[in-house]
Image 1: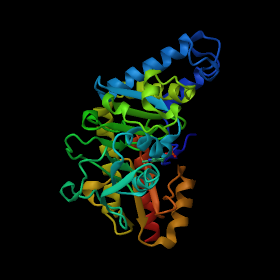
Image 2 (image 1 turned 60 degrees about the vertical axis):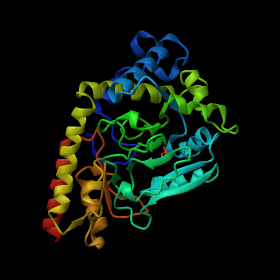
Image 3 (image 1 turned 90 degrees about the vertical axis):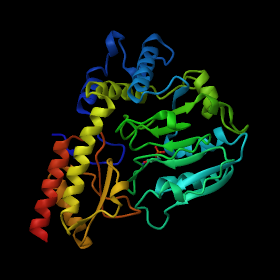
Image 4 (image 1 turned 180 degrees about the vertical axis):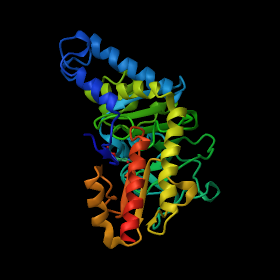
Length: 358
Ligand code: PMP
């Protein structure tokens, strides 16, 4: 029996995707081999990567003047790869710090250029600071933000208009959970192990004019211009992770695309936040307008009950609910593949636990 899996990532995948991958494991489409055994340059894998790219472009509505690349290294490697690709002509970058992940990003960027903190909520990551308080340096190369903070449960619902200054967004933990107007950004990137598929592939969507700003030290395998010119085949790409991402894109299209999945995600998040807000037993500290639909951190008002809560959850097959070690408490990640019945099972359990322990 499959558990209700609330992991922040690697996270639950759609069961149809896992079943399809299982059925194609030994012999992909009559090729006589699994996807992980075939040449990345062969006809079979070429069709897999091209379909995945086209489906992702269609799902997100990526404009023609943006390249979609499959890289490796995850979000953490991008914290270095981004400045190395963008600080070749201007050495300064703006960073907005709204949680643990954007804080890590600005810290790493300091190795490669001058980091200017345009806004920060350090000390209490519970809101997106209003845009009119941001102190943006216009002569910088870009402004980086994390559009959904996985650990702190803070999400951007809108983005500022910074004119010529490109916005670079770490969308790792909410990409494909809702429509996103890519044309508002210079670069959108994310690791795959939440809403896209399995760990091992990083998606980078970059506007064409930003492919020519790299620092000379940027490694060739991470130079976007080189990767894009070679259709993500400069080095051997993470073939199986790209294949799984492709199956997820097809699954998303069958769900009706991003506008349809967004409605499901709103319903799931509303159900969970309403349960938290309607009781004094559970607490979520994030301002309502900045709450993440994907990652819902919550605390028991009486933290001595944490272990009992987690044990009871585990007994009901509600798994991976422990909060990140840096914030404590609980966290339910409810990505696209987590269905409303999982959230319903969680809130039923939360109410029962409150009744019996309050
Ligand atoms: N950014 C965000 C928003 C994340 O959630 C994560 C992973 N949880 C990362 C970056 C880092 O990803 P990775 O471990 O794949 O490098």
